[in-house]
Image (cartoon, rainbow, N blue to C red):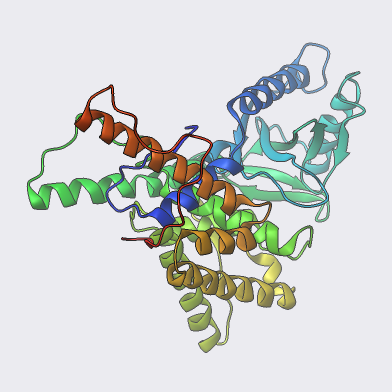
Length: 381
């Protein structure tokens, strides 16, 4: 994942630069990502090693969720700054029951001297807690009746199998991200512009950044409230409505408006918004809303409140006001940090232009420790 944003995207505005920097700040670092990857491969080896009751199965272990989709978000709340990383341990369909497989994975992890004190059993997975992140190990078997990467996972409440398809979902999400490239190519073809030798580094990330910001705003508003909208619901809705915009703010506006309209249409028909797994339509990501109507109302209110926040950002007079609103929306002073990063890039760009036009012996710009005078330009200017 990139460590800094690109300021040359054709549809980007100063507001987009601020939003992009907020999302970049939320991402898991390369070191943390590498450490998590190393850890989960070690888990896979331990689960399937000779002497394990799981060794008789053909198995594989792989990432799913935000780690796979590159939409990780540093959590905000009583859990502290820990990333939630999801891993699948998949075995062949060998006729064992759902809870039997769950128990085999749990018991095998308890046999390891380092894992046993990190274990936290959850509804469908077994969590291993580490400093800075935790791994949620999801036991799974290949779906005996479906192909295309479909699996079934144990559900401790149902004490039965639950359908899923993380590999298919990841492929779907990547295809949705690629809409940005398709739109750009069509636009260039229509205007007969030559294609660039290399594409901008962040061409395919506007959807990812919009998802990160939706999840972070959710965390900032709900904190540790269990009624908060699920990440998979927000990700699916964003991906499903994405039309290829390269501007993060445009993606957010379009996504939120479409969701708001869809909920209103569902209510007009006497129902609710249904969010199915696009890679496995039998899996309803929004099934809780069927019984938890208060949770559904909170979701709708969250979307409408987010739309108001985006409208306030666009109406704000200057970047300082936008940074203040971003602080309220995402917390932890992220808007102020984004503004500082943006103004530093502006100063560097101005100094570079000045050096090119006046020669290397000229003194240019303010020093790096000085803040420029308060600006009056707005996003899109």
